[in-house]
Length: 247
Ligand code: NDP
Image (cartoon, rainbow, N blue to C red; front, side, top):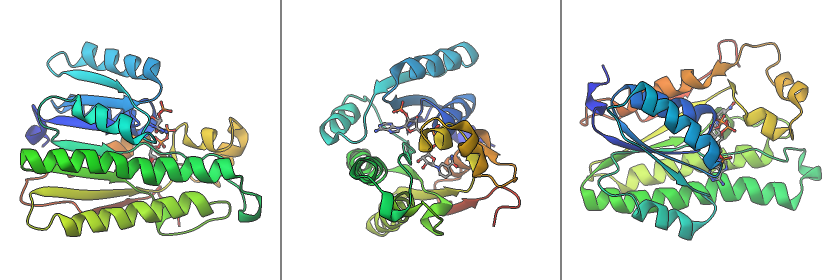
């Protein structure tokens, strides 16, 4: 089912944990070569070692990458030799979440810089490359939060609405160009995300699920790999993937 991915090169941002890490394993299992970007290089090394041990026929490269730094993003993408067939634009965070009247400058800046500006920097560098190489597939990690707001979600929801806007604009810009654009919008997924969001408070982090069993990172990665492995004549444009029971 995923044979079209064999030998393809997939760049994944935010591959040091959660959904990005799960994507790395699943793309490698499908025979794709993976390039893993994130700030925590120790975690990337562990992911890379696991892939090398399980899938010796694929290549794995790790890149220390802070998506908020546009020059570093350009350099990282230029350092990649060969085509980038698929970009999984996944790096993101929701730190300092609070009601509008309590938001700190630091939280507003960090989330917007990462989820909007960072995603744009990576998109820009990779779409330039894809245009030169004659095609590719950009998969954006949006969120149901880009469609529906929730208490203390103002900044994060705004950034994920921006991901939707960027996705739709890029899709319009690539009409007639063989670049496919997909947005995955997951609902509740249990990763380190909520723990980071609540500054390490695991109890508060698990309270966000309201008794619903959250999805796993693997559940989301399956949709990403499915989208990436369709025939080039068709594109999975949008995926909304919710935890069962999630409104
Ligand atoms: P994790 O916290 O497990 O993963 C976030 C990843 O983003 C990490 O690998 C982190 O790596 C990376 N990252 C954060 N900031 C930067 C940065 N400045 N530069 C490079 N990488 C960065 O959470 P998830 O796996 O859950 O989140 C992945 C994506 O999924 C995010 O875009 C999130 O918004 C989205 N999402 C998550 C949902 C959920 O419920 N968990 C639901 C819907 C969407 P490092 O810290 O090493 O840099």
